[in-house]
Length: 335
Ligand code: NAD
Image (cartoon, rainbow, N blue to C red; front, side, top):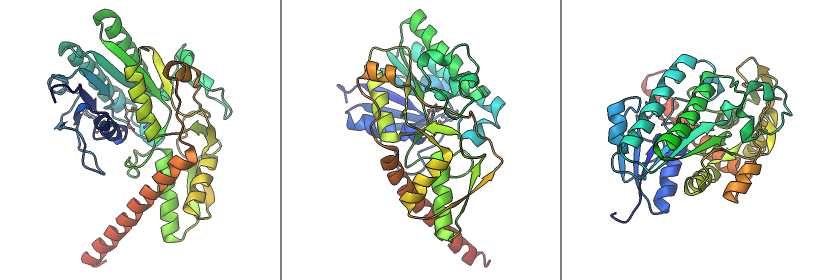
């Protein structure tokens, strides 16, 4: 352990954080995870895991003690349904988390700090049509993110820049574009579009009902990046000397209707789509990966179809397990 680099992953109980811990352990790091909850779907691979509320300064000091590097992933977040309905809560919680974690990292003499921002920082006015131009890093300004979630991410990006300039801490900032994969939230209201769609199709298949509800007309577009590419990109960015914000995502744009069709084909189940009112976010969004390729000499390489195959199989298994549990509960309850 003496020769191992010690790193902290905040949000290590969450989707990307739990995968990142596993990746970093395989690379030989000593890893501390911190979160308000343990990972829900598998035991953590971290050497040490601390349950801490990182909105609190004292907890941030505890989390960052004795580590050389921090991957800051903790955030109060979810899919469009959650983000567009909890502005004040998100702004308050995430501001506290990021202000306190970065200041504590400085206090504890952390050398490198990677902050996880989002494509949600990009201005709404550049994302008004389904065939919107891919977003370059420089497109962030003049700023006009759609939601409080994006505004907070933007301010925390600026915070990292100033901590780098004023205190010399080596900050890295990544802007994720829709990361998906297995062992992520798939139900309950915080799940994102790929997981929600996999769940709806798995439930339909199980119940023999073909109708799938889709928010809006389903012609809104996004790009989706599989989790294994995401953690690889995070690692490469942390090791690079690039300190400006960098996109991390796929640059293949699909409509939500196409996403549903790809999953239905993987599930080998014929669906009909029912379009209903619901939060859709911006109309069109894609990642411009020119800078990513230039800086990292790499880009995400796992296809949407391959990533969705693994993700769908895992979610179908969760849906079946849940259905069995519900049946057993009904039997016991005499329903
Ligand atoms: P996630 O919700 O699965 O993980 C976030 C984790 O932060 C959760 O485990 C949560 O419990 C933890 N957390 C929340 N409040 C906390 C607190 N007060 N103290 C300690 N921990 C707290 O989300 P994720 O998809 O793994 O996202 C990781 C990071 O990447 C987040 O910062 C998110 O905003 C960012 N991001 C993710 C995506 C994506 O597509 N998943 C896109 C853009 C940005």
